[in-house]
Image (tube, rainbow, N blue to C red; front, side, top):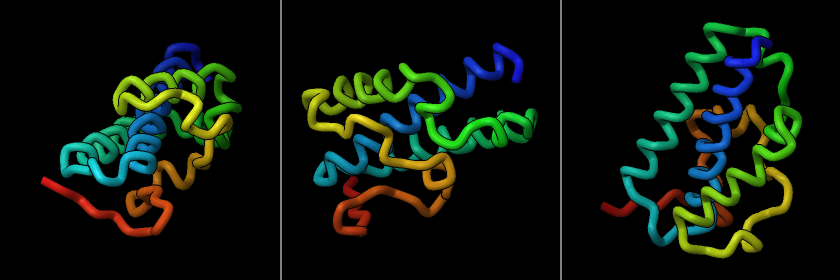
Amino acid sequence: MDKSQHCELVKQLKILFAYLLRWQFQPAHRSFAWKVNIVEQRHQIGQLLEMSPSLKYQIDQIDQIDPKAYREAVEYAAAMTGMPEFVFPETCPYSLEEALDKDFYPAKDNRQPITK
């Protein structure tokens, strides 16, 4: 995996995981804009994986890509939500497969309410 591809993948995954955390931990604030952000990050990562299929085989979860990456995703999610970092799981609760699944939106009650 070339270093620039690795860096770009880590960057995109951090953003995606932060959005998924926000989706899961602030269900009352979900919006179409949030969903669009998740979809866009999935498309960005999908394009990167299409350009370099070897990337997908070398990763399983974000912690295997870069040990700081999930911690940075939590920091980003905390900044977006105004919630303290300790509210979020210590380790990434999503696999790469889940995160990239267009139908996956984490929710404790499996519902996906969306407000305008």
